[in-house]
Amino acid sequence: MSGIELILSDRNGVYIPKYFVEQFADMWEVSYEDSQICALGPDVEDNEFYWDAWQTILDSAIYRDEEGKVWRLWQDGDLWAYCEELMTNEEYLDFFGEERIED
Image (cartoon, rainbow, N blue to C red; front, side):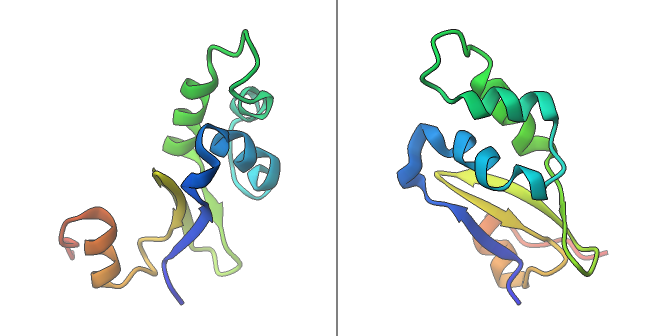
């Protein structure tokens, strides 16, 4: 099992936050207020907090799988879910651009 999963392609552009909350927010631990702001989308004229809300979601969202493993979000164009515990050393290096520091 890979510790990295593609959630949304970068082809969704500025709508990634909107699509994420519409399709996945109920499975992730995210702020209700931030998810409501993102659900409005970037085209709403007075939605000035869209990108701030999205950054908060990226920084704090957590998904716990059936085995209790913690997954987090990462966006670099595409939106990814990752679980450090499940990542191989090669995946970690490719994903974060640095060697994993083992305890």
